[in-house]
Length: 142
Figure 1 (cartoon, rainbow, N blue to C red):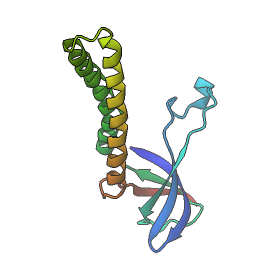
Figure 2: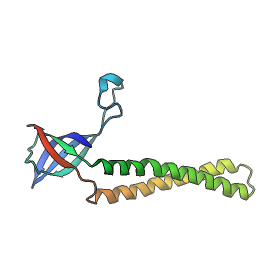
Figure 3: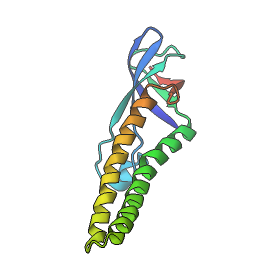
Figure 4: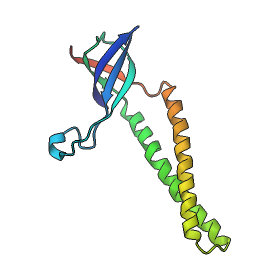
């Protein structure tokens, strides 16, 4: 996955780069007319190309890792919601509670909340690991 980044600063062989996230419309804003503002992510990258402050650089992140993280972020909460709802319904129904479906759904929502706590821990671990690494590919303009 390649993106364009703006070098904000360079310090001790590292570069602070602002990278825009890819928008849902594929960065072709004229086609969708949504007027969305795409958030910027700041990353620290090894300045392997000797980029200077103000340069536009092409940065790369392995698609494999992007897909893994997207799977974790989207699928785990969905699975927790469905599993929690199914588990809650079966438990409350076996207990003979009349509105077991509502309580089962609330159980699913509780497990959905638990999944967000879990994802926050995973996010912290990923930030501190070396797995999520951007790499400078080339300097586009100075």
